[in-house]
Image (cartoon, rainbow, N blue to C red; front, side, top):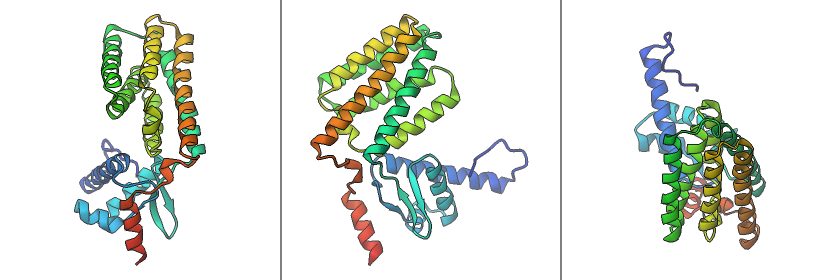
Length: 250
């Protein structure tokens, strides 16, 4: 369902219903991205409706919305399941992110200002602190903000929306946390090079460094998968998900 709160023809009841669907979708999205609902786990409409104190209708519409942004797979006669990213899926997402981040950096190079420069420098310093403390979890969150800052600072809303959709989808691939371990300092060194190119207004170099940075992340991901025996962590269902499936089958 497309939510258009500015539609003058929509009734009060329709606006309320659309708003409710958005609230339910946001709640489910948070649970999926936080790992509380694991890859491959079925979304039980009735259980979710009871938990959120809503009817099943908004839950069903929310699941459709999550399917549109790539977080959920809808299977006829079976229901909605949290998407499981395979190795090939992760590679595709990395390649797309490399292109979009490179494009963003090349566009941003021509419109850098003191505010953007200060924001990027500040994020890099925060990552440096996290890297020295070997705090991969904190580093990961700030790292996401660094890339998002580059993309959104272009002022291109469509580009930002596309990029953020890929980031959300990639968060389903749980091996990314392993990828970051042992590479924090090297990764932040690449961030500094990107910012220097942006400050110099060099669009070509900004593109190459940004897309190359994501490519290096992809190579680290592939190496991490090799250490895991080639099995993506995303395909391993959490105990909570397995228990739910077992209950459903009883």
